[in-house]
Image 1 (spheres, rainbow, N blue to C red):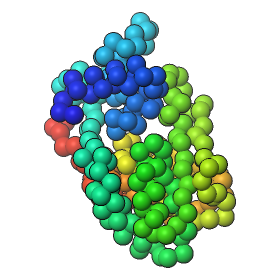
Image 2 (image 1 turned 135 degrees about the vertical axis):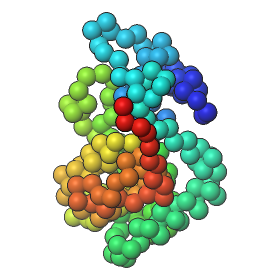
Image 3 (image 1 turned 30 degrees about the vertical axis):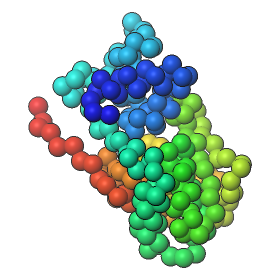
Image 4 (image 1 turned 120 degrees about the vertical axis):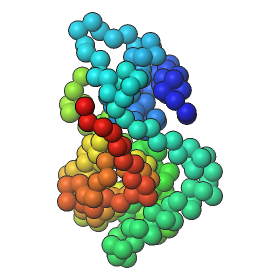
Length: 217
C-alpha cells in the first residue's frame, strides 16, 4: 500500500466482506480512529450527522497515524521463520523455564506459532475486544482465549503480536492473562509505533520502532 487512497480502498473491501471496524484496524495495522475514518471516507458506512469525524492532523483530512505494511514478510514462510527466530532470540533472555507463548489474533497468531516453535513452548491465542468493535464503547466488550490451544493458569508466558499502535490491545491482553491466573513476562512485536519499553510492568520488545517526527503547531 502506497498512499491513503490505497488504504481507503482496502478498508472498503474489508468492510464489504463483513469485517468489523476493529478487525479492519487489525488488518491494516492502524488505530481504531484511523480505521473508522478510512471506512467513513470510503462511503461504505455513512457518518451519522451527530457523530464527529476524526480531527484532521496529517494533511490528508484524517487522523495522525503510521501504516506498517509487513506483507513482504507475511506472505513468505521462510522470511516469517527468520523473523520469528529473531523475536525468539530477544525473548530468550528471560530464561528457559517459560513454557507458553500467547499470540494476539489475528496477525499475532501465526507469528506466535513460529516463535513458540523456536522457544519450544506451548501455544495459546487471545482474540481482543476490538474484533467485536463496530460502534459504541469498546470497554463494554471483552476478549477471549481460544480453548483449542494451551491453558494459561499458573503459567509464565510471552505475548506476541505484529504491531503496537496505541498499546491498548497489548495492555488488554496482559490484563486478560493475569485475570486467568497467568504471568506475562515479556511482550514482543514486529513494529512499535509508540516506542514503549514496558506496559503494566511487563517489558516490551520490538524489531522496529516507528517514530513520527513532526513540527508542533
